[in-house]
Image (cartoon, rainbow, N blue to C red; front, side, top):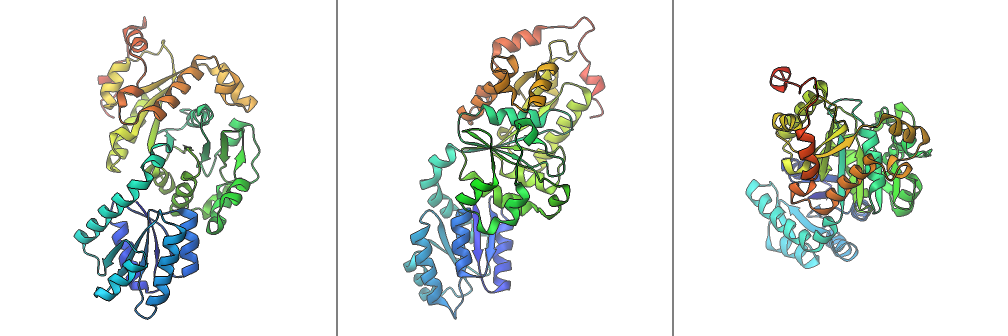
Length: 405
């Protein structure tokens, strides 16, 4: 659940913020001390709930704000908060249109009760919308695994309104994979986030085709220095309401901005190659995901540059990682480099290739059934053939080579 907060008392605001930050299922998007700014924030970022910290000397104006907010943003749950828990204060807010009241100091049990009710209120009107919208992070524990290639082609394979967000802020190059020259980047989103609306978004993103747009990485390296994790959280939340799919092209480091993006993702495609460094780094990434509290259903391992001649038994690798592969993208260096050099996604430049077929299968699986992981795995027929193969040099002994992983 996401929140916007308004309060003029810094101590009370800090207490509410700490309560929001302490809950793993809540996220603060915006904070302000001004009525007009709160109204603008709610329209702009569309939080699950707005928390208004009541001021005993300004109750009537704040009740007017609640009425206006309820009228202009009926999908937003309104919560009032105050040290004064008198009936007149609570009922005044409720009659103006507030849904819940939270007493300061915040008690954990009371906060949990309020959050549960807020969740039920928001779920009723938002379930269908959320079901049809997905944010997919493409990540690898090591460089050179083909993250940008897969992210670009996955985005191009979607048959719905999709945004490719290049969050490799230091060295992002998704624009060249699409053959476009962006005028604006995520840095411009950050500097203009207080006034983002549909018209400004349209001018800041780069259109590639009818269904695909790009949010480019900073055009100059120094521009990334001004971007904070909370900026990325706010922007992605904002864009998530306007695109059916967002594909995140991420760097291979667990920096704060990358983690903020991974936190928001509905699905994480963990890209690996079938070599010892690739397997080791994939296992390390899985351990980090576990420490971050991500459910296993959110993580999907994809093997890139797969070849039947690789001396690795897939079953042993899957057992070693504790994860089933959902995709095996074939290796074809020549065709892949041709598409990159042309600045055209491979799924468009070579629509009949095996690489294209597998990427489109992964894209369809992600869209089709998020509750049934088995539906996302490669077809059993092809896997049996793969598992049955043996190279003349013999399969790699994972027990020995990965013992130190």
